[in-house]
Length: 295
Image (cartoon, rainbow, N blue to C red; front, side, top):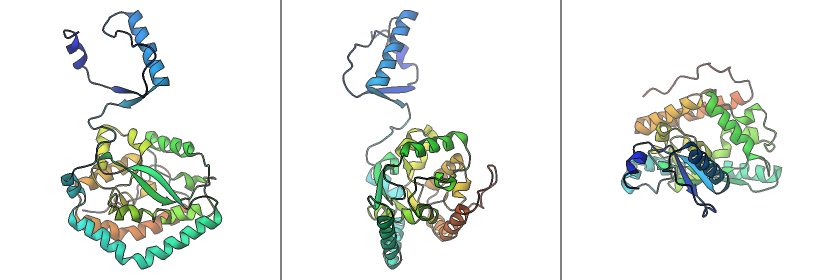
């Protein structure tokens, strides 16, 4: 067996099969050449994948790494950035707390079910955390529809128009307004206070989205996710998935006080623009988005 080992290690690993429980059948001897043996191995792998295994793409980084070190976190969340997060959240309590209270009452009155919606997202260095938003979907809404729509946006490279902008019937009454104005994202302030997010940073991606990233696209998680970011103030739903990734990676490599302040100042106009986009048709694919923030 040792004499045959180099035959295996000289080829890159493209898939890793993680077995959830012991296999009922013993895997055939893959070291034997021949079409019959290859066919037997193929049948085994098909049964394993469909029954008791999950397949992950081979990447330079694991899909869900361990918690980042203190040194890595200090680079992604330097002292000045954490100070701005806490200072702005504290100073704006008289603004966001009453608004959050009103939105919570609206959701509770207009739709049965919980007020908040919590979903696992991918944070700094691939670490999972629970993101909190106001619930804007009706109870028992089919989430796979949104997952399929996201998949379409990724592969088509078309502007990332939200599904609710196309007339999603699963939204609660007023849900489209809450999303268009970003009010549904206000509870993420608590994620900021916990240090899981920052006011400025890349958009926190879903687990399914992260699993579909190419290795080079995962560089966007080298910064703490944010409530607003470079993508949000540079067209957002008018940009493609690829453009969003590029802007978030650019930000993660160029974090600075001046860039954060520019993004914060441009966020209110961007929210207004997003709201007006929600009440009028978006431009056709290929139309350039608004001017990017100059650094």
